[in-house]
Length: 253
Image 1 (cartoon, helix red, strand yellow):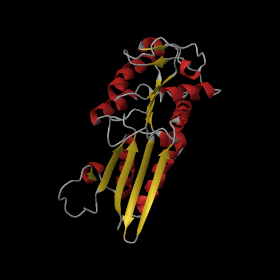
Image 2 (spheres, rainbow, N blue to C red; image 1 turned 60 degrees about the vertical axis):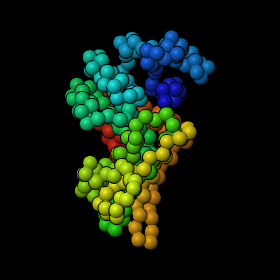
Image 3 (cartoon, one colour; image 1 turned 180 degrees about the vertical axis):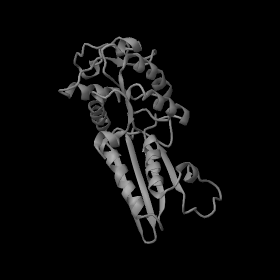
Image 4 (cartoon, rainbow, N blue to C red; image 1 turned 30 degrees about the vertical axis):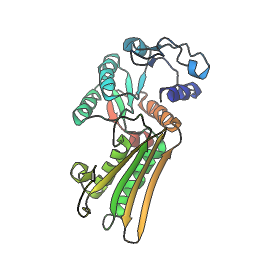
């Protein structure tokens, strides 16, 4: 994902790469951030957060929850906006992001893809129209290296549908079925997870009724869409002093 972001910044007329951060044990440390693509960016990959943020106006963060939370105070101190695409946060960790947004502008979304966020709006419309008589299941698939499940995007799909139906996802979500489960609760929203190979990200919401089934899907063939959505988020934050936003705000949805 970091490489896709670097490529997107390189191709953008209104953006410039000022830093590239990696873990302290990364073999890429010290290399030029554009070396993987055969070009010289003039920016060395670093684990030094202060150095990485020195000339930045915004940090695009696709890491892990602990790393993102370590970046928050540094960005607050330097007045650097954040675009957070990291997933897997607990409610307490999300609260820290909300608090940080009181001092810096943050776009926080489980998926930066424009197409995915349009899909969320389609799900809201479908849920309202199919409010009764339809069982709702969400199926997602990702590569073998993804560490959290269900994906943040799948959970957001569930949240959008539940909210449209006036339900609380925490109360109606079903994440595991095995053994004798009994008849399906019609008010539940089920989740199924697939992990394997190099699947970038597939998400499908199924509304299964009597005699018909409606499926709304988004399938990613590369991470380029996430990178382009992230740059749109960066542009949205330009000039804003603080506040917590999501991709609906960025896209005017």
